[in-house]
Image (tube, rainbow, N blue to C red; front, side, top):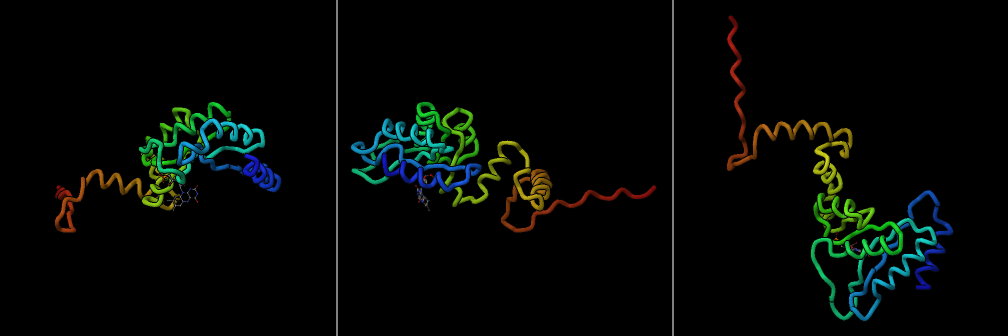
Amino acid sequence: MRFPLEVVDAVRAVWPEEKPLIVRVSAVDGSRDGITLEDTVALARELAARGIDAVDVSEGGIGGGWEHPIGYGYQVPYAATLRAEAGIPTMAVGLIVDARQAEAVVAGGAADLVAVAREAQDDPNFAVHAVRELTAGYDAYPVQAGPRLASRDRLLDGLGPWTGPGPVQVREPAPVPSAG
Ligand SMILES: Cc1cc2nc3c(=O)[nH]c(=O)nc-3n(C[C@H](O)[C@H](O)[C@H](O)COP(=O)(O)O)c2cc1C
């Protein structure tokens, strides 16, 4: 681990203290012959001692073939182990695709942060949508959008879903009561 630690020392020396410095690690190699989780715990302890703010916990894809579990949140257990055993904040990544899933990662103590890659390519507003889903609020939107989307959603709730096939599906206004 000499090389990554030399890089960390060089970056730490010039990176402002008040800004986060996060190191991405491959917690295990793609092959079981390579880096193990125990190796990465040792690295993470060194990183913590050097003032690194968090480790972003991935795993290696190069090796003798994919020999590790794959599925939703498949790398979260590595983040949890590093957090518990090296005493360093962690960022979990890998098939985290749902706001409630991301919340469960943090609430369950596996990680302090969640990173989203491909899901954010599919929905660049993922984080904003997650706040809306988890809080039923629109505060994460820019001020010019949030209140308008909130009132539009109330309108859409009243209208129900568009059912087609025609593009126009309107509700007639209530008749105006006649005077007298
Ligand atoms: C376009 C793209 C580029 C990526 N580049 C890197 C990279 O340079 N270094 C790295 O460690 N991971 C890289 N990744 C991996 C992601 O950071 C992430 O760990 C991985 O896609 C799993 O998370 P996801 O399921 O949210 O996509 C990249 C992923 C994508 C989709």
